[in-house]
Image (cartoon, rainbow over the protein chains, first blue to last red):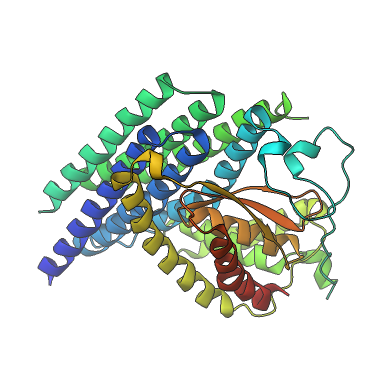
Length: 131
Length: 89
Length: 163
């Protein structure tokens, strides 16, 4: 039984390591910032996720204690990675691109990053009804 | 077998860290540098967890959690500074 | 009255779970402290988040999660292949505009996060009125297909959950 778990953990760790290094290699190889932005999302999803799942199984099977911290770290990384990626994209757009480089938004107003200087209006989203 | 797998994954993430460091030095712009630093944080979290596994204690998870939080806050602060010229308005 | 004490019931439950995960062991004392914290924090943060999100169909969240995890694994392999074996000159990057049918802020946040977490696409911006998302694709020979996939695969499911 332990053998099966050992193979599972080792496989997860090796897959995670490969995805982690491919993510970091992408950061070097890809040509410009916007394309490089795609590499770390890969490293953070399967790379770190695989390591954390492997460590959870390892501590449960071989040390006999169920540790939930890994789940918390995975959750935290999965929640924060999109926000950092979005912020970096916005900062890049703000510094290096103009509205002419972008496709049309096909809505009443343009993209939010370029509207910062204009007076801020409320988005037209519907507020949820009070239950 | 697990010790070998841990060593392999550590080498992978350590090499990834070196790649990121190279990108920090040879960045094409400020946002590029912030992106490389953010990826470094993610790789270091993985390395911390791997080291905790090889030593067999759970202490390193606290360190990894703190690292994840400070990394997130610092990246957002950098980007906010680039976007608005100010962090807290 | 109950609304005053628990302005965000889902947030309260989430905070209890997160505190128990942080403590890392099941003890009565820490559970009581978790309940205490989970009541206090939503009351103090309620002014910044006045509207309560409606989850029409919370169980459908699980199905959505399964779809997203499957897609993350699948597209991880695709993007790894692109990074390793495709020369940079053959990359076809594209900006895609995704018009939104979702209207609640929470649903749009979940959709944007999902698009970023599946490798190969990154949400870069939202239009000022909140009716369209700007998505950057790493390799998209056919940008319209990407847009259609986002709309049918993720947005339709989120419609069922949130609206």
